[in-house]
Length: 125
Image (cartoon, rainbow, N blue to C red; front, side, top):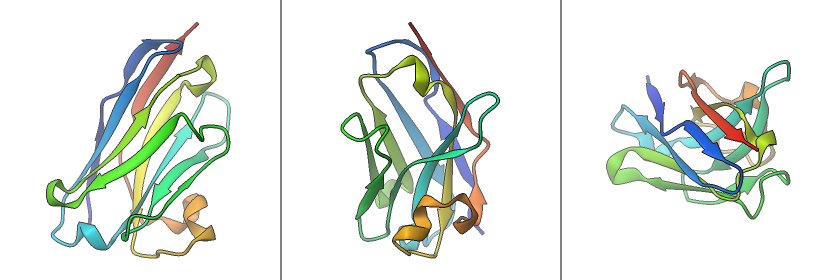
């Protein structure tokens, strides 16, 4: 069982930066792939980025070059560094974890077994 807690969300002006954290419980967190998803009001949840247990990353085209995912297994934490934020990045951001380290599957929310409660990111224009 893994419990995930996101933090770091908030209100930021367009062009600004935020770093989200996803803190996990569990001794074997390093074995899990972790993804970040987001959901804006009235829209479906969408994939943002993911990192496999070995460190390989996958990133949606909409945020590529602006968002970076990283992990610190010693701290059981995955980070999402978000730069050059745009109003369209406004959403609730969720982290999720799975032991299934498939390549294509990590872009799908149904692949993940554990989810955090989400953290709100609001980007003002």
